[in-house]
Image 1 (spheres, rainbow, N blue to C red):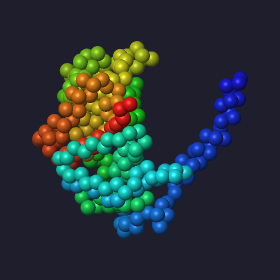
Image 2 (spheres, rainbow, N blue to C red):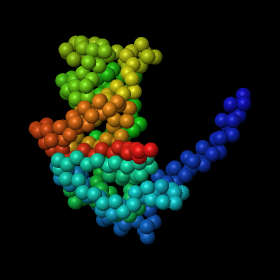
Image 3 (tube, rainbow, N blue to C red):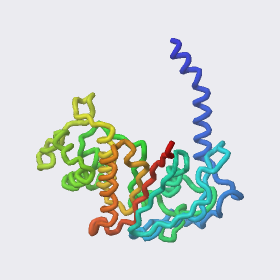
Image 4 (cartoon, rainbow, N blue to C red):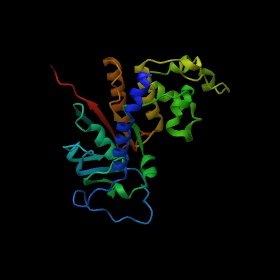
Length: 272
């Protein structure tokens, strides 16, 4: 009972946090703080064709009730075929910059342009059809292994060879056999067991789960690939192999020849 009443006593605080969150989401940037609003058409524009350049111009962003900018006066240009690494200590704004880059947050100052188009005028679904994102908080679902990978691009869910290739690139091709999906890849109807011990399916280590999440990103064949601390749960040897594979893929024609860049945000630890 003590735990129950203790939890009930925290409800007002949680409500206050939720109110702050929804107020932040719904709020508009004051005109004197933000950049001038672009002229918007009646409907958002499509991002047609391959991405050629992404430009961040003097971007700044601050979270509600914070006394300092999470991102301050950041400028960056990403061109087709480039690999960009964002390296910094925890709290330095790497993940925030990634969310700004994808239009999840809007900058208070500055602008972001794709192929010269202001990001605020681009239909989000159109942008996301060109981009793949792996965040720190990825999830594996109680589905088969193949279904977990194919969630990244449902339209290609039947391409089992493409799934196997994505797993091979992260040194996990053998996971198909572990998950009982060998028959599925050979064209039989059994598409493997549901993952998770609660379903008596195969379980994976944290490092293997992270590599499966990476395979999901590779399965998409998107032009813009953004990885937010993609190897935090891997040992040094696995990390080196996978990062080398990323660099190879960034330059590998023909299937990824339209790749504009890989943006990799990773932590940097100071020596004691």
